[in-house]
Length: 111
Length: 116
Image 1: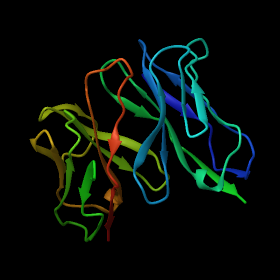
Image 2 (image 1 turned 45 degrees about the vertical axis):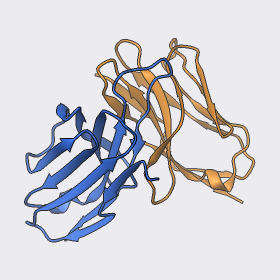
Image 3 (image 1 turned 120 degrees about the vertical axis):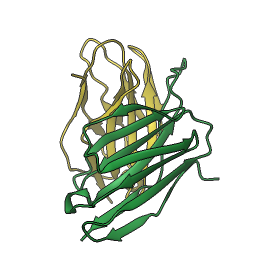
Image 4 (image 1 turned 30 degrees about the vertical axis):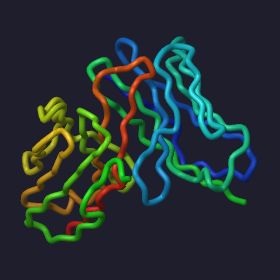
């Protein structure tokens, strides 16, 4: 069945370090792909998205490219800040409108 | 303006009780969802309604019953609460029709349910 796999956390980085959170998926058809972020005590909010192969989503310095050949959608940021500390979820939307979330990756950025 | 709101934010109750969580969205979306997030942050879909019609009903105990009085509201009623029901419950909404840019879900702030 359809699924999303993310690298396990927690991930701890120093401020201004580079971030990569790996995400791979299994899906039939052509899903849309998303990254959501959950700050402490809050609900999830969309960070970025891509709807077809080779699309690049970007927002707040984060980027992810929809790679159909490797079924991946890795999240990257060149220089993280303390305010980026949160849980990050990779997700896909299937052709039958179901959204499947990965297990989440907790990121802590220390000054 | 709050896009997706949930009440209550916190709910502490005893085993065996019946409780409800309410959700409202003012985004004009036609699809609403309930998710359960466990202590490890794992997010699992429970239900989805499109235009008041149930379209996704995952393997959830029948003690959980969603009710959608209109497109803007999706409430969750839980009977005979158990310890394992303790979690954070999130409501979300979206457009169902895929647009050129795709669609995303908008989440409420969550309801932390603690069953003692």
